Image 1 (cartoon, rainbow, N blue to C red):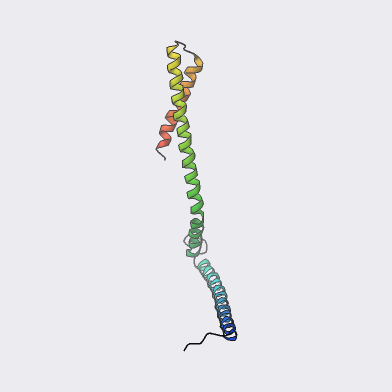
Image 2 (cartoon, one colour):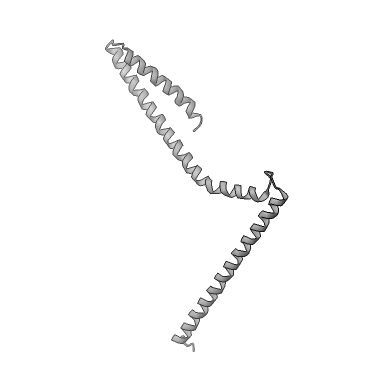
Length: 137
């Protein structure tokens, strides 16, 4: 039959696992150090081959990595700006409707005033700007 592992066998198994993990961690540390040395060597070699040009592959790779790290931030900012722009357009549309209703009310009351005319002109300017702005959403 099978026999259950005793406390001393469990302790040895834990110790072996701990030792194995330590060895793996040590190898990862060595590998990381080796990779850093290789990167430094490549950077120096590329710097020697391409001293002042923009085609240095190492610099291009660094630039690509920087752009990749900035991309999520730029996407969030772009989404935020589009959202704010849509809100502003909705506010302009609401303002336009308000001025139209006010204009209708004033026309019925036969009250033509400079304030109302100026407000209507301002709404027309905002509407034109909003129409041009919609092309970019």
